[in-house]
Image 1 (cartoon, each protein chain N blue to C red):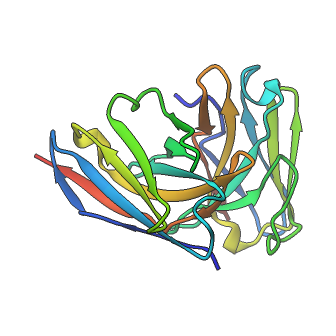
Image 2 (cartoon, each protein chain N blue to C red; image 1 turned 90 degrees about the vertical axis):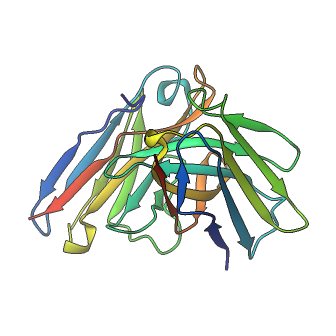
Length: 111
Length: 116
């Protein structure tokens, strides 16, 4: 059971907007620790999509955005494209565990 | 361009030690925290631990009795030793650099299978 909870799967049609949630607790997201998001395409290593909750690395389209509130965070993808079909993971730090923690991952299917 | 390349045996026998090397290029190994992260087949990501050049080390509590992460700055290499492996340790192992709490660069990963 992951410390950070994500929906196992999500789907959307091309052009739609989807939101992936990441729910934690007071020892991680709610404790002020940043949330980071990664995209893992099939057969590839993950890559950072959003860091420090809201920042996009250069090269990541502005269709991807992150937000954080209280003990949860969200990754929003607008203008969904076929190439967005991938697994998405949130990540933070948990002070109770003294560890880097990942969400269980969300498999996004583009219909 | 920062490149991380994992290497090591693709198969390890049960109860033996899994040893991997990550060769780093394009960045000073002194600059980041260096992590190992694994992904069991069809599963999510699991952080194993990280180490900084100063010696600051932190491990996943579920693995810390069996794991050691070390650095060789002269060779720009990061090492992982995982002792007393079982089938549950079969996974793709990623080397990764971390800064400000997030992974900045990932290796391509190496699949290690524990066999009986």
